[in-house]
Figure 1 (cartoon, helix red, strand yellow):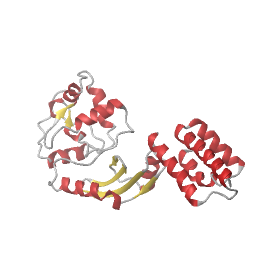
Figure 2 (cartoon, one colour):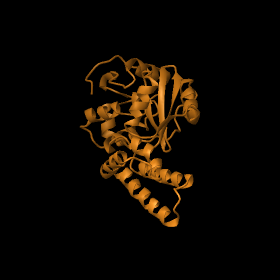
Figure 3 (tube, rainbow, N blue to C red):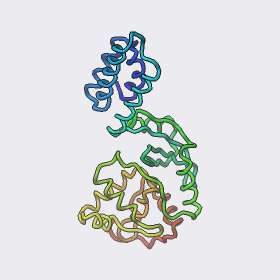
Length: 253
């Protein structure tokens, strides 16, 4: 049983109308998942409280309370609710995901909505489409591509990356519009001069390209290096920002 399946069954667990097989599966999942295990215990405590107070089945308010408690526990465990939308841009359709803490995903390549949703479900059991809720993201991307915005004000949620990758990405956010740096220089900026390849790997795992401008990091000698959206897109973004790439030469890193 997954966290998503556990959440879906929670409102039926509280009244006690689940079959033994499902309850057993939920108990097994709760034993191995800290967040769901916490709510398993809370729901059973709530059931005992309700049983003591009255012989009636739990009402809708009690169910909503239990589900809210679970949502809170999942957030603390790093499984936040994600809303997503589809945003057209000059470099193609972007799928963008966001949590209450900020933008958590930007994906190039026009994947199907089904595939994109399935990928987000690997991180969170609660995923829903909400184009209207991403209006600010849509507007800032529009302004960026129109040349009206040189620095995003959007918050980002990096809970899904490692501490090293987060450190690299936070430093990358400091690279100004129209400027570039190299993988080696960025490694030096985070105090790891010999970690240029590791820095390149961290940038390749950037979940929010464009908003965190990993396209502004290039290889020594003016070579483009890599980019999750593809090198043609990286060239377009740098050109949009007024940076002219020199003739490539030298090493990749």
